[in-house]
Length: 79
Image (tube, rainbow, N blue to C red; front, side, top):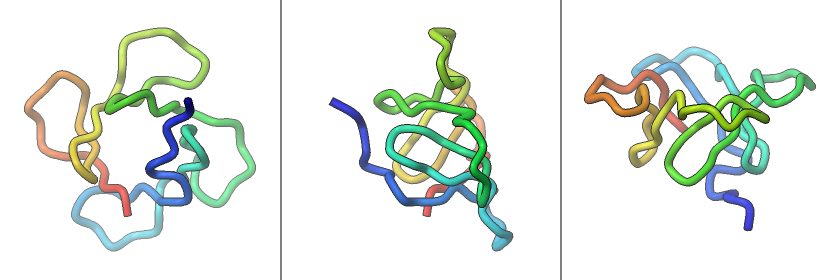
């Protein structure tokens, strides 16, 4: 089953009021306001490069996105 809990939401740089950086369409993340192919894929609480089985690049914690497997400050926010 596809993870669509964030479908239709946008990703912004954390703590800024700028325009969205990415759009979430289904379980895929695309550059904002483009028809480009997916750059990332959401699998559970992790974000992977699209169409690759590599290590996760980011981790979703609540509505914030952090570098995977670190205690770093949030890089992005889902709204």
